[in-house]
Structure formats: structure tokens, C-alpha cells
Image (tube, rainbow, N blue to C red; front, side):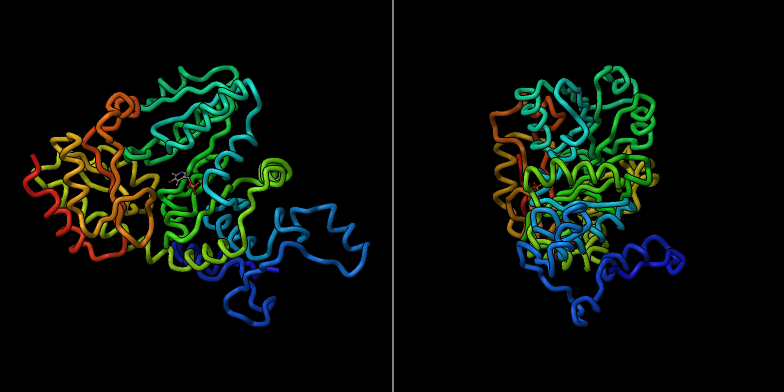
Amino acid sequence: MTKEFKMNKFQSEIEKDSYICTHYGENPEDYHGAVVPPIYESSLHVFKNYETFLEAQKDEQNNYLYWRGTNPTVEIAERKLAALERGDSCKCFTSGMAAISAAILTLIRSGDHILTVGNVYGTSLKIMDYLKRKWEVEHTAIVEPSMEKIEAAIQINTKVILLESPTTMTFKLINIQEVVSLAKKHGIKTIMDNTWATPLFQKPLLMGIDVVVHSAAKYLSGHSDILAGAVISDQNTIRQLFDNEFTLFGGALAPHEAWLLIRGLRTLPIRMGQHQESGLKVSEFLSKHPAVKKVNHPGLSTSKDFQLGKEQLTGYTGTFSFELKNGSFENIQKCLNRLEIFQIGYSFGSYESLVLSENNGKNMDKLQIHGIDPGLIRLSIGLESAELLIQDLEQALAELD
Ligand SMILES: *Cc1c(COP(=O)(O)O)cnc(C)c1O
């Protein structure tokens, strides 16, 4: 029972998205007029007689029986995410990794081959090692992709291409349309991790991607107070996923986390606008700083991805990286320790500014494999004032060797 939105009411996609974030998928009439939907903190739903119970059992995906399958609060978040991505259907998971592993397992079986294109999230890569060890699934990583390299890596048993754009840590854009057309030509399914851009700034399904996955712990929720994941795709794929990897492995999102995700989504458009603006200001400051060799931000007009960005993104978030001219471990250490507003930690996409490096002084060969410069530092620009963040970076970068 959701108020359906009429497409013709919206003058633009931005208007439509902000309506989805604020109201879509909710129906106050169902909750006694409460403007905020309740947290249905109930592990099961009961039935007035055995006949209705048996009827509901026939289609667990579309009935409320037990929280491992469906929950009314979680469904509000799922409806919003499906609508934002312009997909048919969504399932929410306890974490991004639960969502990503379920999406991959839905599309492969033992003996298949997976291609990863560009730098992908470290733990997603570890899934590839796991699948190889336990299920003889082959994997090829193409860190610096070109269409020729991707095509050459395609095997008869290639079933899935997994990608992120921009890439993890290095923030390079992948030409999504080119990857999609290559995948379609060879009958390969594509999974795209859209955590960085959020559906507000990038809509992979509209570009032909088959499955979108998210860690909702980042921008989507935006307050560093939950872990959640999502898979969005067509009815058929989500039905497969629901019956197998979702229900059997038991990674259903809890209603309280879903409620916090819904709350976070309400402010997504204004938060993203702010992250974008401050992110560009800080990256422009860094690109002129004498201690900085390079800024990896696809929204800078000097970026080689600037043109492609205009074609496939409608905005830029506040997460990007830069490279120190002298990328010694000592310099990284000094810079990170001197920062006062930026805090050291994993994750990104929330109200607080964060800084991260992958250089631990002992892993140069690993960094090289992933195409990561030893002097690379990732920033997540939070909701503090950009001027304050620039001051913080200025004092941290002063007099570096
Ligand atoms: C955080 C993240 C994940 C993993 O999600 P969790 O919610 O931490 O399990 C996957 N992909 C990307 C791009 C991420 O940033």
C-alpha cells in the first residue's frame, strides 16, 4: 500500500529523486497518520486463521511472515532504493559485503570465471580469493582497464564482470557503457558497486548494468551509525536472490537499521550537494599545493576523466585522494598525525571528515599491484566548513620533507 508517484508530476530527475528520498514508499495512513513510519521491531507476523497463513506462505517475498524474509520498515528502505536506482526491486542486507557476496553468488556457480575491472573494494577482492579456494571460481583482475584488455581477458566461462566507477582509492572512471556493451556481446552479467556515487549522482541500471550493489553505511545513511547493504536489479534476479542467497544465508537487515537508513535518505540530496561543493573546494586547494603531486578527483577540470564524468555522473561526492610528492611512510605518518579535524579511520561518506592511507611502510609491492601510489592519501570530506578543512590540511602539509 504505497502512494504511487506519477512520473509526470516531476519536472526533473532531481525533483523525482528528492521526492523519493523524502516521501516515496511510505504511507502514513497505514501507521495511524504518524508522519514517520514505525520501526516494526517484530520477528514474526501472525495470522487470523490457518487459510490466510497458508496463502501467505505461497509467496514469502510479497507477504509478511518472518523477519528473515520481509519486514515492513525494511521494505520502505527497499522501495526507496529501488526507485532511486530506477530498478524493479531491491533487497537490503546486514552489510554491504552481505549484499555484494549474495549478488555474486546469485550469478555464478563453481568453475565460472569473474572479471574485476579497475580497482575494486579490498574485501570484494577477497571474495574472489575465497571463491577460488573453495569453489574453483577463476578470477582475473584488470587494474588499468582498456576495452582491448577486458575483451582479451574474457573466457568461455566468464559469467560476471564486477566494477566500481570511480575506482577504489585511485578514483579513476570506467567507461560504463563500453563495459556494458562488451558484456552483453559475450552474455556476461555486470555487477556495479555504486556506493561512492549513490543513485543520486549515477544510475548504472539506466546505462545497462544488470545488478547494482551498495554499502549503505556510507553516503546513503550518512551518519556513521549503521551497517547496511543493498542489491537492486530486475524482478527475476531479485526473486532468485530472495529464494536463495538472501533467505538461506540469513543476512536480512534489521528494522531499526532500516529506519536509520530511511532517516538518512531524507537528507541525502542536501548532504550530497554539500559534500560535492566542499570536496571540489578542498581538491582545488590541494591541486595547487607545492607538497602535492596529484589530486585524484574526476570533477577537477584538469582530470583526464573530466569529460567521461560529465557523461555518466550528475555530481561528485566528497571522497577522493591526493598524492604527496614525497610519499615516504614518514611523510604519510606526519601528515595523518598532524590533522586535527580529519580523523583517521576506515569508511567514508558521512558527516565527519576522514583520512586514510594504505601505505603501512611495508607493502610497496602490494600497493604497486593495485596501482596505488605510496604517497596516496584518501579524504572523505564531511559536513564541516570547507575553509576549516583547508586550514587543517594547510597546517598538516606545511614543511613536509
Ligand atoms: C564499505 C564498502 C563496501 C563494504 O560494505 P560494508 O557495509 O562495510 O560491508 C563495499 N564496497 C564499497 C565501495 C564500500 O565503500
